Image (cartoon, rainbow, N blue to C red):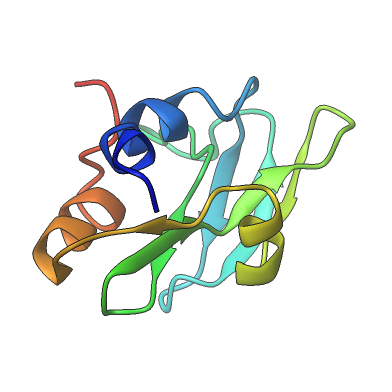
Length: 105
């Protein structure tokens, strides 16, 4: 992986989606549905829903479906789309994937 790619993870993630969805999940974090409108108070849009391997790699588990909606995305699909993000440390990966450090504050 080249240095430019490593330094551009946050910007790449922020710019990789053009629309929004409201994601509903179960208690284990499994995707139940994609919605055009919030389903409850304080429901925030989820355009990526990052997942990780609990090591040093993260990727978005949802992607745009080409019809203005969203669908689930596997690791191999994320790899093909250039959306697998590798980190030098597990701590940085967790900040990115689990804490959302890639998002604009």
